[in-house]
Image 1 (cartoon, rainbow, N blue to C red):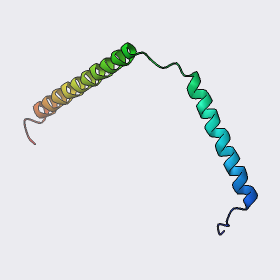
Image 2 (image 1 turned 180 degrees about the vertical axis):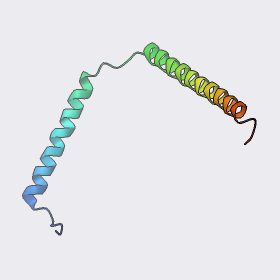
Image 3 (image 1 turned 60 degrees about the horizontal axis):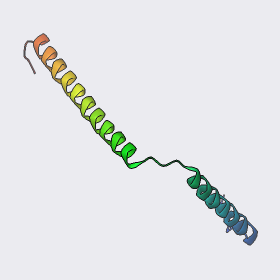
Image 4 (image 1 turned 135 degrees about the vertical axis):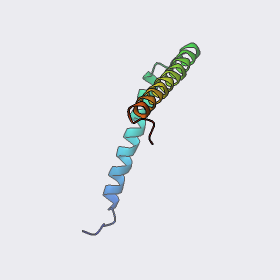
Length: 77
């Protein structure tokens, strides 16, 4: 099925829907409760701490499993 050019009525309807969408977004953005600077800092530090913790945990698991598999296979690679 070939794409047909939109009719003027379809273009007008699309433009109207777009305008309504943008107005709705603007209205919702005014309702947002934005975090304070202190909340941003606390959330950022928590995120960094969790990323480091998960990285250390993953690294420790990798080291332990590598050691175990090396021991089980008699050091063969």
